[in-house]
Length: 255
Image (cartoon, rainbow, N blue to C red):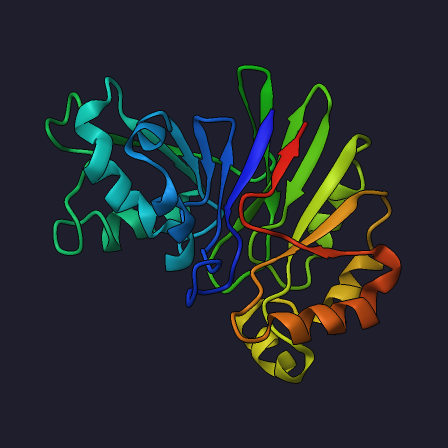
């Protein structure tokens, strides 16, 4: 199992700034931010599943364009997996014929370009010996993270979250955890904004990692453009004992 980082920034504004998306092998996306746009038409046509953490634009923006670009070249619908609350937002506010066509109904309801599948907290979906388990997140909209597991190990992606005791309860049960990808969106001087928007800043990250009982490589995602160096410096100061590193575009994790 191979996970490639397509985007891991908290915004755009330069050739390295791509919003959240990960490509699992060549057929599964975890979120669909702006990084998906760097894939070729052939690569896009191979994607069969998109697992969403939540409904915010930086995590879903490429789905409408991807379906439009390759829907007609595929022999089966793209399957979008999400919790019911996220699904309802997508159907009501994106694929509603006002913002974008409802590709779950065209070209025909019997053979659409896209279909929906709901997931529930704690559910594990197994696909060709790969397991994806839905983890709790704490964000301003209903949200989740994902635990990815193969025979060789596990990776946890928290998604967008603030302080989250239920997450650590689940993470600390994972005996074969190799990698933890966790967000830190704001620097410490913007802690009030982090709290209001239900993200993390370095001092809050330190409090969260104090609950982490496993040994794993830790990577930081969702850093805001313009604050990357400052925030990583503060993370080093506040959480240096955990040796967190900044996640990079095109970084690959093998499990």
